[in-house]
Image 1 (cartoon, rainbow, N blue to C red):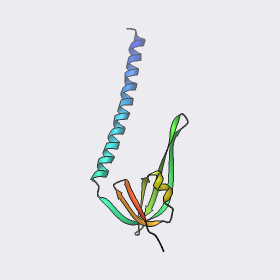
Image 2: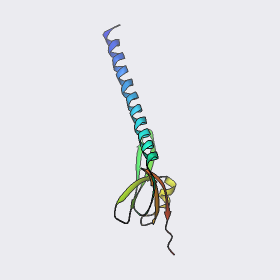
Image 3: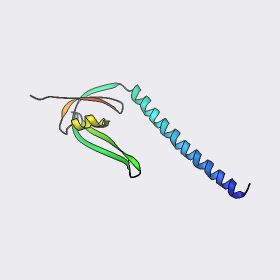
Image 4: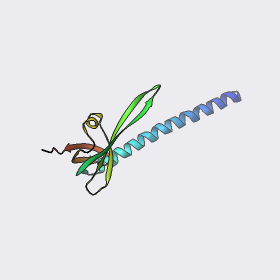
Length: 116
């Protein structure tokens, strides 16, 4: 084999290893987060919606993906930001108060307090 072919195969092998390593690392991170969330207790507490935001990734030549986040504030003043489904994000309004349920970093639901 010529030195060019050897160099080509070495570079090709390095690129493949780097790509596979990135994929394996992403799978491990996702699995760790899922296991950590499942091991966490389910928590329910009174909270108020204080902020909402949308993160858009991709676009151009790749499909755009929107992720919705809502920040909740508890009566003692601490805050927690959780990713929420698109359908629920549209229903939550800044200022809403109610009962928030979550487990680890996973949003489980928000029961709005209805004032009469």
